[in-house]
Image (tube, rainbow, N blue to C red; front, side, top):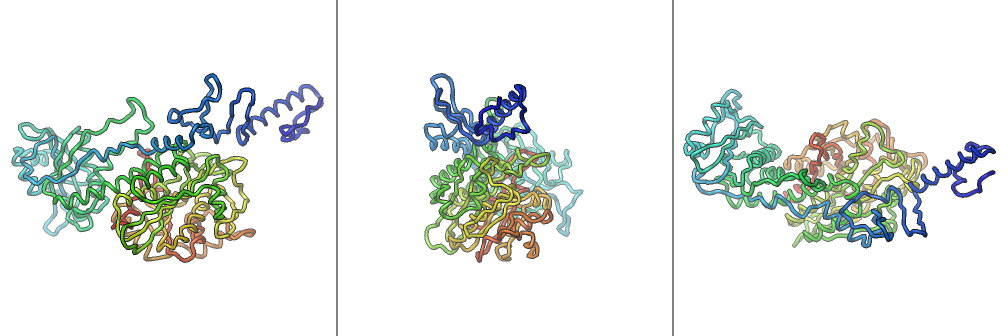
Length: 610
């Protein structure tokens, strides 16, 4: 007997599923049951009135564990982990923000200050002596000569009974970069001494100075020292002088540890280091450098926390909550546009990406406004895909990195990190807008499909040929929004293309800009801050690959030059404002360490606060 017609039955081609027999009817019934399961797991919310319990889709159910209290939906032990079932959505988001951005910051617990007396009079746990490679008479490095101590270090060596010079001789210590020796001493005011190779002084850069600071901090932490004294000359180059924050930034960076999602013995023990003093340093200059370094560190740390946070904790809503926290902590103004407001602005390109997710999109706009006269205005835009499944062009198979697509919001992390740092440093004369079109790119019955046509807020139409080329679609409306603010320059940052990783590897970001002055400013800022970036071409003839036969643009070009055509696509949404695009897909993540790098914050801060 033929089963009664229903919506579930209508989903199943009957001729292929059953015959006129009980067995085939059973097959049909089983198939309908499977269809019902598929419908429930992908799009439907079924409410069972008898028990009053709400079942939700997989997209709705997010494993947020013990961080959120669950509402009782039944008299017994039934609970729902769905944010929609929480007594207070805002309270739930606040708890997510607290987990994503820890209140305790280890960097606040270490003091870096000057020691004005003779190093021989210092009492504490560990003395660290950075030593440069020796030079020949013509000023070149001498690969064969042993390292030579600075005058201050020689004076200390005499007090220590020649302990430092003995270490150099016994270990053939030449002062090459990365070389280090740690030794205990007796009969002195200190418990131990360490020699650190600083390489060639003439080749010192902000990057190498930051690395030196990190090495020195690591030695002190590994030695379990509470106090340490640094004795020796740092590079004298103006580029990396005592006023540079690079050295203290390196020290602070080694204090970072991501223990947010660890428990018990898996939580790393906090370092014992409390004080690092630098012999002979000018107190005012050092204090200024440390203060600036701490502001930058707050931003870099935030960027690392955001990129490293799992996507069931860092959602568009909790990212907006983080932005609100930045505003509250630093005095920045903030505007969060909800979906309806974005619809009113015609942001069809951005909302097309967001429509497949249960999580609502959040368009974030933070503004730093200095006291006094404003001489220039800058907009920083960050790609904010808190998770990218690829959509219907699903990321699948080896190399898809779907498990790492939490870092697809690396651009927004850099921008929000810069907001945090700039809010701390408060540079004069420049107003900065920080913009993030946050959303998820998910797969569902409501998601955009290959072949869909989206309309951006400037009325340009876009044929979607690949749903996994979604970042540029969100950035398109963000660029249009930013230009309406009448800023002097726009810089967007995004983990946009795998093609950029193929071109430049994992250490360099790519830079595209039709404006030479802006490009040079970014390159100089990146060099001064120790971040690697390489300018790439905007090839005008490649625009032909973006032409659609049925719309204004396609969202992808051909396979070759994919990072270039992605930049050319973005250029279509900027009319006259100087603009630059940074593709940071490579350096956003340290694959060996398995963590975020905080890339981009230093460069943006340097652009605003030289």
